[in-house]
Picture 1 (cartoon, helix red, strand yellow):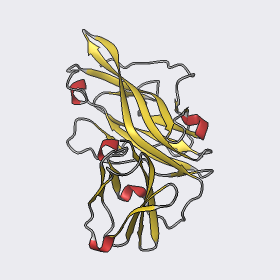
Picture 2 (picture 1 turned 45 degrees about the horizontal axis):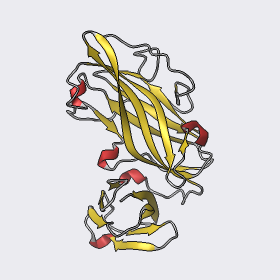
Picture 3 (picture 1 turned 135 degrees about the vertical axis):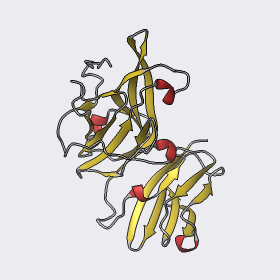
Length: 261
């Protein structure tokens, strides 16, 4: 297996090998899967909510397959490596593209020393990258991780662009309190969505409230009479951002949902 030592121009790279927090460990259980990512936006998973001027860290795990067809059936070719290239943030209000570093965050890769570039991930192995820093700018951002997958064609690695998309990164001004439970305890997906969204992993007691950014409540339900999973129709809701709050046993968890018809 040829290991790539790719030098990426500093003007576009938002990933680093600096030690801002304890280095992440590639220890996620992907089971029998050939490849995967966690959090997985296609399954409704998101990074934890961040708060302005509060140190933040969350981990992105990825299992790299040995054949590109595991990711895209159109590319039935041996996979050499995957390189994390950059992060694209789009402010959901202004629709402006913002660099990750402009809001005080960065991605720190850990490829276990398998290549001089810490963001080069060799096929057949699991790695991780930490999204970390101290946020300086509140907002709700659509986040995409841009990568290049190097497939082997006649013995030569050829780059193919790929992206991990569908993430909504929330950076809030004021924490709701130290007793909040993790937003990873439950999921809302698809997000963004148009006609409906699913809720999974809800607590057995408490209240769920969905409101718009003006504070107007659109849906409210008591969880003590609701199963752990629910579906909410959004066909008549206007495009924009909505707040989902789950309160249970004196704690609160918040997610934001983007409607795009």
